[in-house]
Length: 525
Image (cartoon, rainbow, N blue to C red):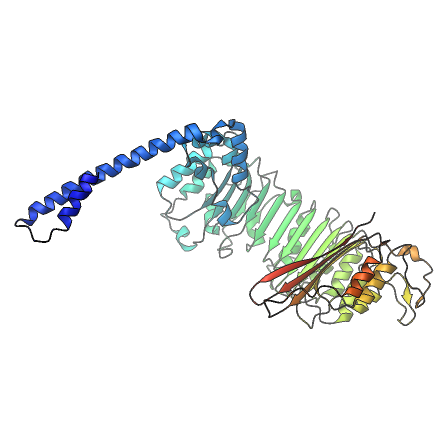
């Protein structure tokens, strides 16, 4: 090798032009061929040495295959992970590319191949289609979870497109268990037809890029009897055909109000429901004459980010066994309707209000007065200074005792046992401490300024309080404001409290966010 390089160097740096340039070119080409051959020999020897090192010194080869398989399962993301960067990073194909031993183990482990995440293109070549077929053939007889991506809409409608990848997957449709379709609606023609039963399919997510193309693009799985979890986004309800009465978990995004009500009307066994980004408009579905009875509904989440008028939706729902209700929106414009919905759910346990502007304190108090059965209240306030936060007026009305200097009225949140608040500190610590004391039996604090409660037992004890107090700063060198010494002293003096108190201070700077957690947590003995 050294001789070849010296010869090449001497020829390349010749100081005078040769008599015949063709002779020099021939010599250079000969040297290049010799150098290439030498490099090939070196790479081959390198490969042989690495194989020997792996065989003699790699400790993982000493592990039983069962242990290696467990490692592989930890490396391959579960199907519940939907982040593209993560799911396309660690795959069985990647594991098989490490060495022949890993490839042998990965290729013979069906459970590694049961989740398929694939980005489809209209011009999918035969090599990738063949690879998909090999992938699915390694799954044995196990149930399959499939997630299909595509960002292109128009080319899928061309007659020349055969949907070859979907056709390959369709051969295994009898073993489909979870299906996540993020492909154009024009691709639905390649899915199994209604008469083709999908006996194992239990969950379906539909979210086409660009929304519903045409109403004639239909998904009809009304013959599949096992689907219980259904998530639909940006499609027409009329184009989706299922056995609605078997759905127990429903998520709808970007649907009209009348579509939401029609879906709820058909899902008689519904347990959990999430309605996100409800949009203005109607699609011809009839509104119910009386509130829909949803006796099995336990969890309801409403995200009204577009600030759509959803009063008719809230007025048309009756969920007597509702346990958990969460609401977020641009504004709290439907407070009265929310309270009406809550009044039809006497056993409501948890209410969450997140990232919603509250125009006035009276609206906030109206909401809290309606939450009489709520045991856990979660309030994530917005940073808008005009929005009503958790302040002294609210805390005073949460006291177990009535203050003599306040108008007589029902106490707020009488059943409250768990409080979580995230937002700016608009309350003062003396008022917060007084409320904490009053909501503890045996630790009633100073009662000289309160009038006796004829039925103190009707007000529940607080068991858990978590306060995440946010502060904004333009100084990246700023430190957490912390708690003044007098407040810390008062908190430490409440050693008899049967409440778990967690304090977190969150500082937001211009370019980054830091979190500082106070070292104070009071746990009931």
